[in-house]
Image 1 (cartoon, rainbow, N blue to C red):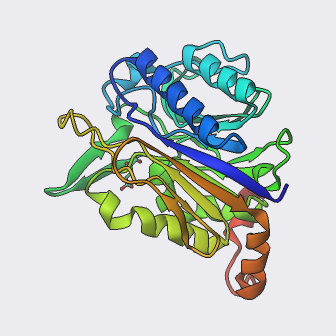
Image 2 (cartoon, rainbow, N blue to C red):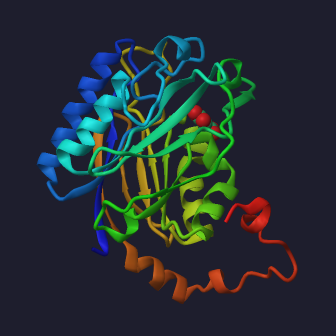
Length: 296
Ligand SMILES: O=C(O)CCC(=O)C(=O)O
């Protein structure tokens, strides 16, 4: 199939009770599939099962194994299998017993409930904007060291057969989307949780930039704004789907909401034929960074 329906679950997760976060995610995923039964891809936001708080990541962390033994991995695998969807499971705090470190990790399941991708946030959100926001993820988290391109043979939607994953701050580093698209991915998905300072400044511009740079689809999925708990981390919301022309296909507001969109793999070719930047690069003058370090 050349078209794929997607649903972005902008849920008010990130609360203290992990089971309640999972239950809420399940309710909204069910609702999405009732509303649009032919949905093929469902995306959850960053830190959907835990508070977005560097001091809480250890407590909520889980060990991720291919057999999906932990609470959240079992939950995600079960949902993907039951509803026969590709599921991008937002992010969860991951504990790796091999190195004793914590990571902010996105796990991806295919329609059979098999774990087909795992991306550890590569660029940690360490910023300090005077009178704006200060956040230091690296206080407790470690950096992921791999670019993640997910191969997904179980989907009959071409655009879902290969896609790239980044997490939130990762979207500010154009190399990730570029390397993924040179590997043949036609879609980048970023589970995210921007804030109310940098969200209005950069969120949609970054999504459009990554889409236009590479002529691919971009999906950013955020938690909802937690208006009743002003002391909690306030996510920007505005989960968004941008097409290869840089046009917004669909966008949420700030509250809990499901964003639906249809991705059309043929549009990528149309855009690439019309504005042929993919054939006009000057690798005789500057190097193709996607070709360095065996990244292709
Ligand atoms: O890049 C930004 O402005 C926000 C990033 C962020 O919130 C994150 O990486 O979790």
